[in-house]
Length: 252
Image 1 (cartoon, rainbow, N blue to C red):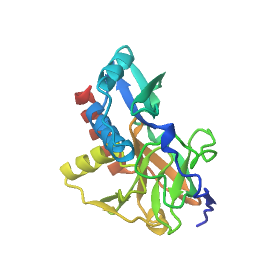
Image 2: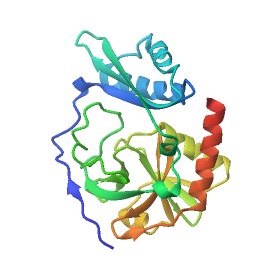
Image 3: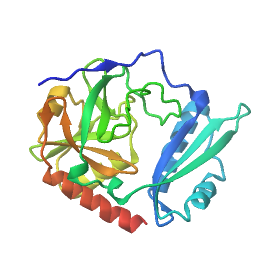
Image 4: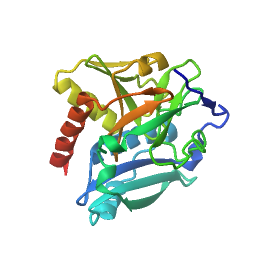
């Protein structure tokens, strides 16, 4: 196998002054998993700024998304220097095929080393991954640590499937603990599948039977290849995606 990794400089750590954000999928005017996203946002606000979620944030989100049929919604909170936050929002319509994409939209991963990872907050300051995302359809950067740990994709968490075991890197402070990541772990456990949160090496990744990504907008996203290693569409990936679809249908 062959893969080459570009290293992102460790001094370009995210600047908390630029704020944090959340991205949600909106279906028929309903922002999915809103409570979970607000809970994660609350944790970051408390840890980084010693602050609470602004009282009117839920109202802002609901008011901004009520007329959207299928869209990506982003809310960013930037500290205003006096203990408060300035909220900005963005709403972008998405195509049906972006959400829970089929196998013909499976992505290719490329390796990039970010010492210490991106971290456990959804930073508005994206310098650590700036330039990694080329904008080329179907290509997604995979973040590795200097110790060889597989961490996450630049815009998603990563899962492997090996002999029926569903595994994902441990949320040890180096990765963003995704809302959809948590939901897939819950769904897999409910289905009686063996689930493992642990250190994942590149060797373990490449030896897997199937690989997929999870994120708030795309849900479960199949992975086609990494370097010279390629995978076929996995039955468990399809099954987990279908169960997530049912959960989202109930949520909306």
